Image (cartoon, rainbow, N blue to C red; front, side, top):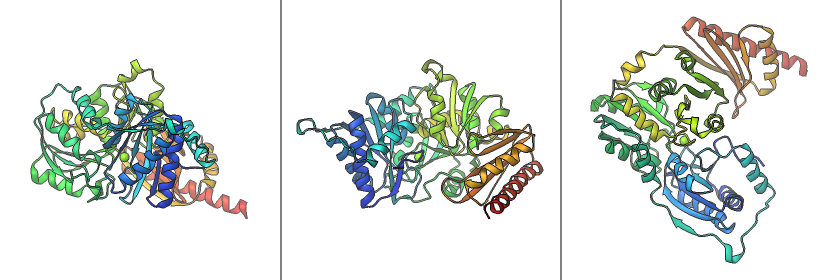
Length: 440
Ligand code: MG
């Protein structure tokens, strides 16, 4: 029974989902004796959390209830328990909810842990605790406070910047503004009421952040920051009210942290290699980045940083969970040294083109054969097919959610990016034709 995507379970909340949630609670509770549970601000949060917790308790788990907490705060709290759970659907629309499960080191449950739970739920193999061993709930009200304190312990600076913060009425509403004020910043709050009624598209992408961009300009602020619903992501607006793309934010953070190794996904910009970092590429999804970082012995983790251009940034010395709040502190620290617009303008610029066409993963074997037959570039199969050259790269991936094949190309100039994109399009078209003729 397939329940989990790479970021946990996410569904529109209905009766079936509540029943499923309680069953997942039973399965998880049978495996983990103590668990800290939090939720984002969605209106269904208490209902879904109660269903999940009811399963945990019936299986005999001891539950600590952290109330509303950003995913990274909850993941930080998980270090004192056998596991942590966040009731959140991240950046999905408000009618959705879901469950993210995390380990004490902050990493998301890996594929083996997820499959174990799927198997238990699929086979309805629950072990209810005996009457004398039923679990109980205790309050755990300081999860956010402890996380904020830990983050503040990391900066010696008294940072007097003006920052507009847009939490989208999500879980960071009572976290990031508090953190920044304690750093010395003057904070202008935009959508920082933790209501779960998202006033903008909750994914922190440029088209959803027009209000933030305008506010940074009208307020004359030094920068703007935005989160998704559970604040594992951060988006940044510079001092000129312009959206800073996620690849640039990742590069700025990596340089500011002074790390040598960066773990990122196959769809991230070549900028990160060109800045001289030792780069490891993974499948698309922050959980894959976290998996690689987790393999490094703890004493060497301070020299590593992980991220995705979507705005998920992982600071392994802190936790293996993407942390939009810690990222906010690091970006403010950076902006206090020099304006973000200046820092960003000094980085090399590349052209990224994205396209897609109808088609399914059935054609990908043929696409691979055709690309390999070209005998040029470096062909990798980490996630889809990535053909890279010194001056650019091309990524062809079958979408996981719709019958589409997506093409991304990046190069140092428009002409080369266009060429690579066209190569992708032609190869996919020829492959689809070949597939059709052979299946006739
Ligand atoms: Mg999220």
